[in-house]
Length: 132
Image (cartoon, rainbow, N blue to C red):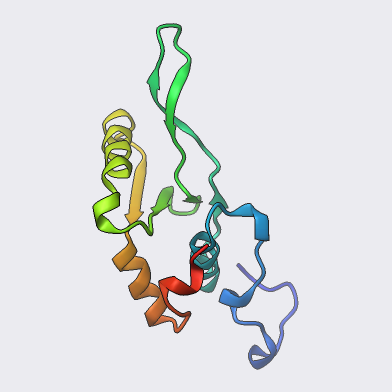
């Protein structure tokens, strides 16, 4: 990203504070993660692709996985999960199925502990700050 007009760096807004569409995200933690992506200057899109995981006898998808973010410059999908570790079994099943069906697609799963560490590292509050 380059600025079209040079601006005194002290007057530039911190990228993590740049607005993102409020109703774009399924959970407030995703909004916070988007701000972190902005902070690091990553181009991203939110839930741009749905990957079928299971099909019925007619070939119609009946189960799918839609990763939260896509970073086009890195060809990387990111799935953010802030569920407690004991509750992530279903999500992990979807991730394993996704990886089996689409081994060429790079996926990073960011779990609660990693997300909390990012929040703390950047002084953006705690996970409770983003509870719905």
